[in-house]
Image (cartoon, rainbow, N blue to C red; front, side, top):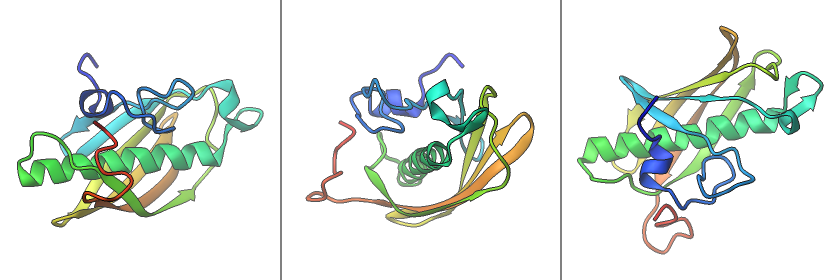
Length: 155
């Protein structure tokens, strides 16, 4: 993909562990628009393993959380006709680990907004490796207002 991911487009100085382009020790995910949400690919490093050959569940959770949060922010931006996404935070998210996620495979994560309200979005999440669903989840992500610690964290 030649275009920049939404993180690098709208939050190039973010230090978030999962999605911050400016965090050299983080996962630095890149999420891209699709017809119904966002998609991303991630190749786990050796230090992302839980045990030999399998990705750590916390890494899987972080991928789903950050990718889902960005899907919500983009959905709110589009629904409200904004030039940039509002700052959103995770209110709740859940992860179902369906099968071991293999290290060495490219992971594909899809996030689809299922409900877009004025200040919050519900998102369905799927993580696949080698053509198999390894994890699913969902989340509720909320836009924050001035005074919240995360407000304008992306600028």
